[in-house]
Image 1 (cartoon, rainbow, N blue to C red):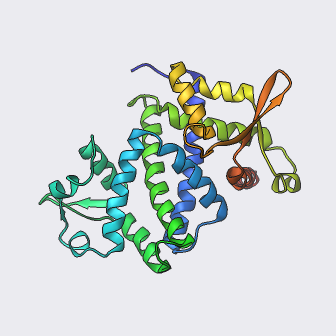
Image 2: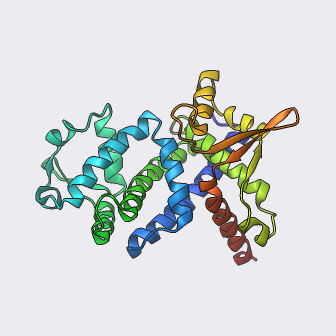
Length: 280
């Protein structure tokens, strides 16, 4: 397998650093059984929306929905002896069931018994406890947030696994993941020297077109580039995800980051500053 360029290696590392911070915050939220902070809810929702547009993560989303249903209804077999694996997979509509099940097992969502049964794993048990603790019904912000945290925890575990394998040259380059976090990392780098009071009061973050073009170069074909930029801008389904507007700026354009990611950007910059102070 070919080795990555210096630029691709940096992208891998920047992406992994952000995912690590999000996953740590997720663990703290789930372990404490508390509601997630606003930056995590809004930013996480956008990340899940983007990743869900790709078949790999769509497969996981469907499987997670099945598992969460069993967990929140306190299914006796799921929490006890386990569900029959083949019967469960018959409802899953997966092209790669073995890989998905193994990933869910590796990340604590399920346990696989020697008898071929599927039972609740330690992480899903904690997540379902959080869901059950809300007790507010499906039509509530609490339920929505808890379900979001469930999807986000698995999606990021899968993304991190792909990034780590790519860094070790054990897997193909996860280009879509890199493009998303490249854009976010670029905004972070452009804004990291902003005074704290200016940063926290900022209403929008703008990204010059040249940086968006750099991100699109992660993809190998024009078709992939077009699909990605149209999807994250909401052109494909009317739901803007990463960008909420594009404005003329001389001979080029500026892309306006979705406002739901503003708190995410502020949090990540503040965390970086905290780490820098701690290392002095």
